[in-house]
Image 1 (tube, one colour):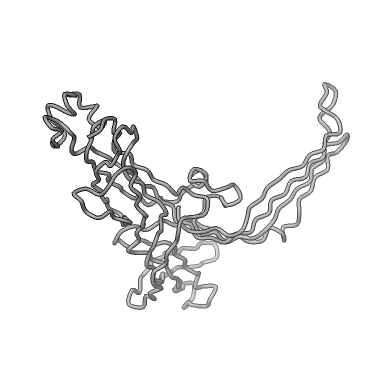
Image 2 (cartoon, rainbow, N blue to C red):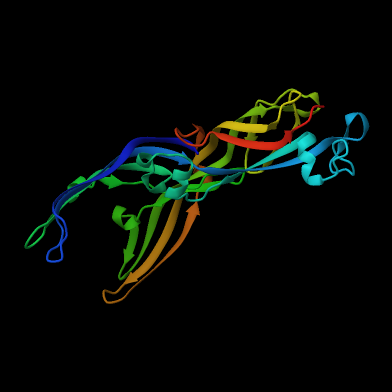
Length: 324
């Protein structure tokens, strides 16, 4: 996950027991609970899939390199399932997927602490507090909640992560024209313009740092230090580089994801027509109509790895058991 979350979300509950439950009376206790939240953030979740394959192995006389699979693998080993044990070259293909409306569990799975979850919303903008007191005592119970004025506001919302060249609407908002006086009324009929705007993302991509684990870039090429995935797949071809006598896995590792996206603000409008007869009403909304020629280009935004989230994506291609 990339992005950031500022603030906190705290919940706690305190309870004092006066008498435990008996067969002739209920449990008597007093409990106080509260929830405090204050947050602002922009989070961009994604999933990364890695597929690996062995392409060349040692075989035949003098450890000559042959394409995989082969009839004789690794000096007489002819079981294809063991080919990785003497692999010389392999490929790791990485594909990034946008996550649509990630839920709270996804945020937990990538490592965010409970006070940064905010119900799994991608855009976070909230402030408020709630509390409740309840006492179970002989006679009528006592209970009350804090005033509604403390609840504050919560404008948090879900939005997708955009990857690739196909633009995607991130947020769209339309305001009722009736409230703004943007209407024409004639008798019992009316026509109203509902203005709005939508935030559009395009050219989204995720950049990773590349680390080689007991491997080097294939064919003697210089090691690639970064890899960018923009909705398709990217493949790295590497050769194992294990010292004689070692028994370790080899492959590549992607770290430090950075998400970037270009954004623009596009004006939109809906046309609403209707009839209001008092006892009967009818209305229909057409649109929205987009005014792309009036779009405001907001430029490119970059978001580094979210603090506390997963930072390493490892793809082991093989294990080198014998020396060259």
